[in-house]
Image (cartoon, rainbow, N blue to C red; front, top):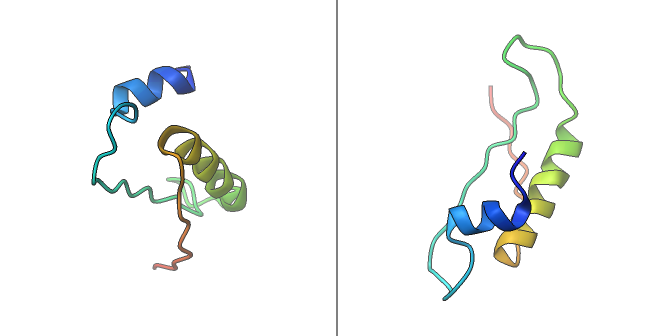
Length: 64
């Protein structure tokens, strides 16, 4: 597993601020159609992105 600090370096999250957007889609179903803990993974994604980039925004969306 990659450490957060190493992941941040690989993603270019350190140094001068950049005008870039990162979009992460968190699914609610696995590849075989089984439900996953969407709330957990959405929260975990926000936690990691906030730590790496200094903030994150979550937008609830539905698809089909």
